[in-house]
Image (tube, rainbow, N blue to C red; front, side):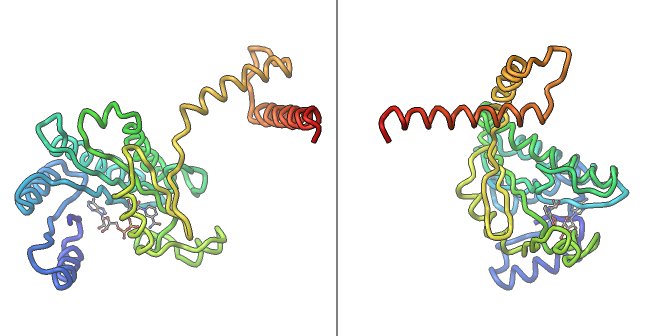
Length: 272
Ligand SMILES: NC(=O)c1ccc[n+]([C@@H]2O[C@H](COP(=O)([O-])OP(=O)(O)OC[C@H]3O[C@@H](n4cnc5c(N)ncnc54)[C@H](O)[C@@H]3O)[C@@H](O)[C@H]2O)c1
């Protein structure tokens, strides 16, 4: 385990050593913004394990309503320092055996419109970056080079210090009409992700359900290109004008109607 908070880190290690035994877990001080800390703590871990690190959870993150630079430095730059070091040290390309990296994203890896300020929204910017890195693995091209299975875990709000220091569980639950997750629920989802996650998977953790967020953007590009061309023909929209969401909705309704008519016609034709 590594964290910038040495006091809390050491307390946690003592707790875990009592439960699992000394020698099963160790702690290193790490400021994720410092590349030299990463190098040192990774080497410390290799010494501890007596060989290559095989699994790495890239988790540190903060939220701040105004200090967007700090959010960017910890959540995005720090996450990337860790990830690139993981590829260097575990990657087959550099003589490693491959491994697993779980990066902590968020629902803010998919949604960016719930923030109260532009500065606050940098949290989402940093979590979209997690999506960018994890999804880059879903075509097997990069995975086949490094064999570092990279997956993301994307929880809804969780009852942790991050939430408690910025707002309160009560405020979130009344705003979104949905309960906040307990850390254990994310832990359980994490275990499943470690076993079942394929390179590029982003596991969404919501109260009462977990699911892999479909990676359909490539198919959606083809679908939207087709739908926009059909909309131009059907509604007579000239090439100077932009196809809007409304146009997509309209063409969707027209398509559904045609499918319904076709279905009706087939049923009549076979005499049902
Ligand atoms: N709590 C939520 O609602 C929620 C939801 C989705 C995702 N997340 C993400 O989960 C991850 C963990 O957050 P959490 O909710 O457990 O919050 P937390 O505040 O309990 O834990 C964050 C940890 O990161 C450490 N940290 C902060 N700055 C650091 C730095 N510069 N270097 C090293 N460590 C540093 C803190 O000391 C702390 O131990 C974050 O990436 C967060 O964005 C949280």
